[in-house]
Length: 65
Image (tube, rainbow, N blue to C red):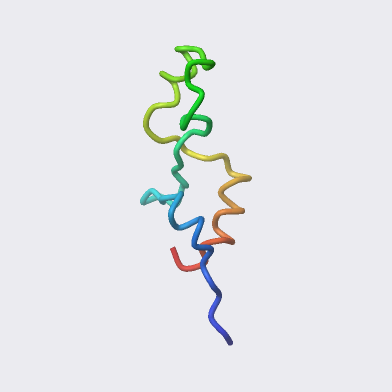
């Protein structure tokens, strides 16, 4: 069987926890931050755990983690 390719964009954006959950940076934090509420900016610090549906998609993108 041929090997499956990993999506390069996915390997740059996502990390996995030891239990297999997917961590990602919150969206909308790059520019135009003056429009965003302080609450939104504060809650978008750090990383977040993606939902189960999104985790399935990312696992297809990264078959060998």
